Length: 291
Image (cartoon, rainbow, N blue to C red):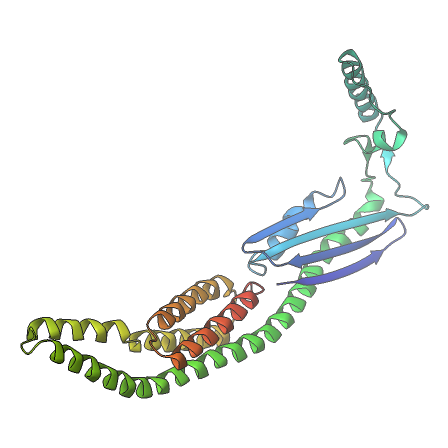
């Protein structure tokens, strides 16, 4: 299930932008990107999303732009020297091995961990608290959007399951006509056997007839499809994180539809079975978007 939410804030020291983006995924893949010095927000975000987001690839990011009036990152002298020393060792080793690296610039040095430190003075404490208070709001906004999408998806899935139900009903009615046609065909086959032999093996004949009846009986498949339809309707009404359950149900629908087609023995029933498979495949695609 997709989703997006954004929240902006500002103070004298800085302004910032929160973003949460979610796309479809079979499991939950939660990725959080925070500026250095704000690692504490990671735990708050994970606690806030626990129990709310169950499925999807979700990226949470925070971007902070510092104002000129203060709050600018400071250069950590020890971190800078350590970064330069590390880069120097790398360049010397590479040169000794005959590898020529591109020249190092100030931007690449600043990007090294520990070179810049965030101003953690007491003046920063109020707006850091604002960032922490943003966490429930940004997660709630994301959840609201996904919930609205889920409600719309439930309508689509409901229409598709209703289509499956109508096809199952049509298959049930088709069975009556197929039974009459099969009965006539069976009588013709028996007559042919009697023409060939005056004394057919009655036990063998009864056995063959039983095998034909079992192979052509699709009533159990239709009964199971009806049970799956009722279970799916119940899931859609209950709501909640039902994506994995629907995934499994689509497999069961497809299995019964395949068996129905293989045992149909009539063009009408085969056509209904193929329509069932098409509708089930369409529904399975939509189910991938459900949490």
